[in-house]
Image (cartoon, rainbow, N blue to C red; front, side, top):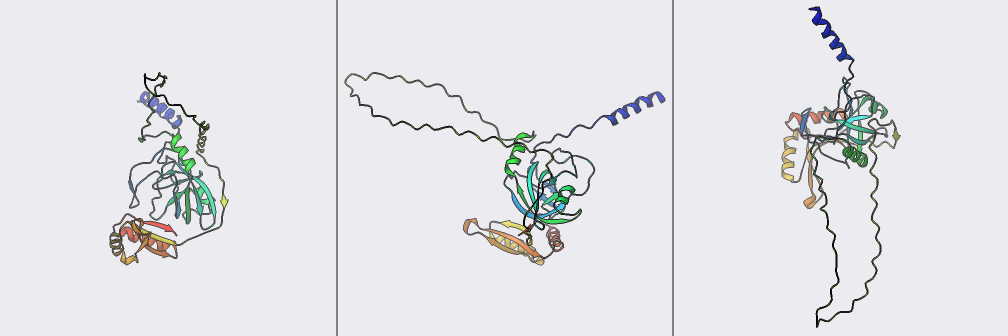
Length: 296
């Protein structure tokens, strides 16, 4: 029995000393999923600008993010429900004016009514205490995010690359005119100006996996908290949705004119985040999974 136990003990000790495989970041968009009672539909958005409420991600044991990166609470990272992963975005705390670039590399946050979840370190630099929340503005850095999309491996299918078909050389030969045919005098051809081929701009460098801590300050610009419970291209479905949420004070807000008109079902504005969160919970309790908490 001891002879069997010793080799097993040595094997377990060797396994414990073996370093864990290094995380391999990859590019990910992903399939629709449900989290916190809400359905989310990931998509590529390299020019996204949105406002909402940011939360602080809870402390979690070491592990990997949704796209295979090491989870680090001290790195400037964030979680978003629909953005491609990873993406680089600038997050501005509208209540303090502090702004910071973060690497969005995970899915979340789980709490409805939060547009982005910040790592504890990123939240602290933006002046958001642990467990707290703040009004924020999110702007995706398109060039840096596209560099990540182009430079990282992915298991998702992308559009095929179509190579140009080869062109054969074309030769021309001058022939003598047929007997009896009239030969036209050639007209002088104006010289064609020389057109220089455009030199493609160099591709932006792929940003580092760990972003530097560079905080900038702008003027604070807090807004009003409004709950949006759906956007429609026709008035009648929007009115039915508002009637379904009449107990929460929902109303239809028309925007645009003609074929460009949209009809939003909104609730609020609210004087406090607690009131807005109660309205979000009320929409979910009504059996609706389309709800957003916006800053306007």
